[in-house]
Image (tube, rainbow, N blue to C red; front, side):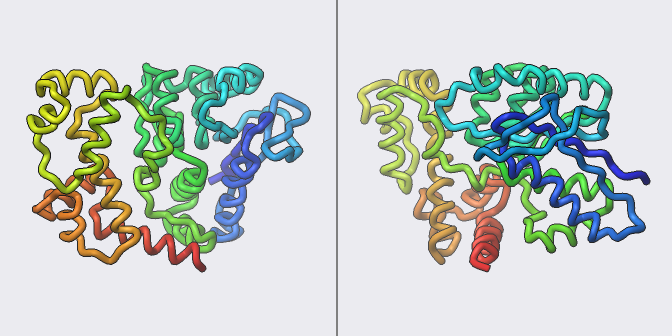
Length: 327
């Protein structure tokens, strides 16, 4: 097996860490695999002669060339930033992405690099993901794509997209696993102290950072539900509180938020349960009761549906990650 040719597409304002994160992990994998195994030939490429990345970091770049895998890093994207103004000067990069895909080669975006792939027309009729904070914006801009914000890495017909920032390592481990084998990927993850068992970015979502949908009516309903998480859900009583019919409540809430009050309540209960699992030693049954579920099994199934892990598994993974951060 020959060395896999990886090109990282550098452009003005791209995250420097995302330019070098994947190559660095591939370098580790090459050392782990040993000299008798095919490794990775990595280059940082650009249609420009000079590139200054995030933080004013000047990058040394090579001209565009044919590679097996083209990696498109993300960039600084704060809520409220004019995304169109950010993407407008990147016509050369977008053209390079489109040409690379047209040649039948693999294209990978890291984090919000997915917006460049969308601009190049690569996400249409494909499943894709991106940073959870900007998944709704990507879905709005690319309605013909199926955006799955809960997933860490998605590959669909030669196009791979990843979740936020550190998901570049999840992609790199997948690549190492495919090219160098599962044992090399596992050892590389251990050497680099990278979690190779993650399956979803949902556990990292903080709904408080998301754009808040809805008008005053739905916000008042949300506030009422949040203040009474442990109470049994009673649609008629909720409607009576706001002096509307159940039909009107459901219609207005859905029109303003795109979901039902029960959907919102379940998500809010899961958020509260996450906090209790992370910060207390309360039993799963006790936490279930605290967020309105008498049956721990029903609560565990709902939690797993939202978070990708059952409550005990979520707590174990969270505490393992906290222990690793503390060293």
